[in-house]
Length: 184
Image (cartoon, rainbow, N blue to C red; front, side, top):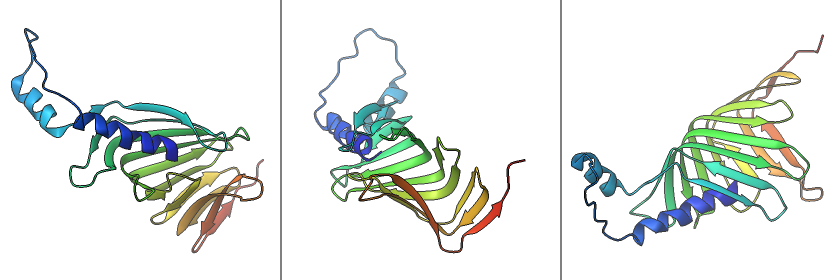
């Protein structure tokens, strides 16, 4: 998840290197064209890569644009990320928006953040802060989750990788309430 966010930051440099385009005889709405050109954005960016420990990462967004006031910072709308961990587990992240700040090693996902794991957990929160260089993330507020054990409410979620085994762990803290629903 972290590596693709860095790719968005790198893609933003494309805007800085662009040159004037001649439009010729292609029919375009000049107002729309001028509006898009002034915003400097990439529509539907897509990135794939791998982390140092072998996890495969793919990421896409509806649009991404550089922050003109902060080099290395990119904003994305409609972010979707998939991480295939080396143990076979798959994590997906969706958010209305994201701000990727590579120099600060941080990606902030905001608005209807949905985290799903292939082992049956679905977690919802309004914000998630993630490292870009390691498997590490923390919710910015309360989390609601459902999974094989039942329903869970917590004040915070941490996603970490165990130093010894490398296994990714979902750690719920700050007033955890679990409603156990046994399988029938």
